[in-house]
Image 1: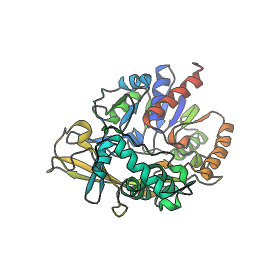
Image 2: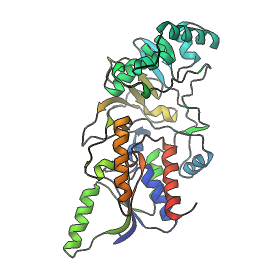
Image 3: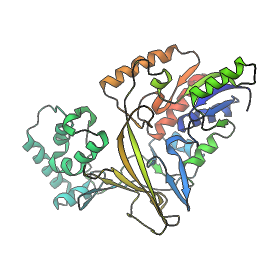
Image 4: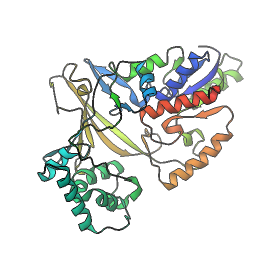
Length: 380
């Protein structure tokens, strides 16, 4: 380890790693620390018998930005995986997103006009004015059948509350597609990196020093203690903090809220194919998991046996892993106050999903990291 670095980067996820890669490429020295025992954050993939396992939920890279696609492609070859999830409701199976295959299965119809007429008739029959809650909002957009079978239970599991208790703004629109196309994303570029995401992050971090199992507060305390004792210590000019912004400030204004997830992985060496699809959602509230991921299908069945992961939504409390910011009025207002504190911090940058308290797709994470690099180096 060097004694001094230009940047201490807290978090070896995609944002911190992309920032570190760009900075080291330009001659800056970076030390990356992470509290986990591995790099790559929530896009970390392990390997079991040739199967790349998405340990923190399914991550499909998709973007309409050619520059970002070319950027990420320098670190890995991407396959042509298309995300086409299924939904299970009781003993019925439907295609996602909501498209003509879904509507045909629901109502036994063939044409877009038939589907539109059924949905419109259902919406008109409900006589909903301005929606007071998520249930009314979803019903007014998609009608009763789509809502009851494919939205209601799944959403209530995600949020841990009745749809009638959730604000209407959570569902701003319901993507109803009147084509026989099961491609979940409409982005031009989509795929899974051959060899998994961890290898991408490993290439990004080449040239940086990395310390794992190292929390930020403990690290700072240890270095300050060493300096006070006259021992060798690590110093740095600036910090990029990609952890929770409220945690950085010791929750002095109160804590921001999140939803968390719990993953239940099952290794099935004797089973070659468990569900026949990479992602299957379970839309009944009575089934506790929201989806089952079968990892080998991200790479078209490679590997021996199979590995599945059941994904359970969970309430978040301090100490749990935060996955989804709850960007309601209360939390957004509190985040603005933390941002005001952040702007007063000398030589500290806040980035990523937790540092900026917003949900990011992976392409947007990279865009934001590159934008921060440009601002730091006055490249624009």
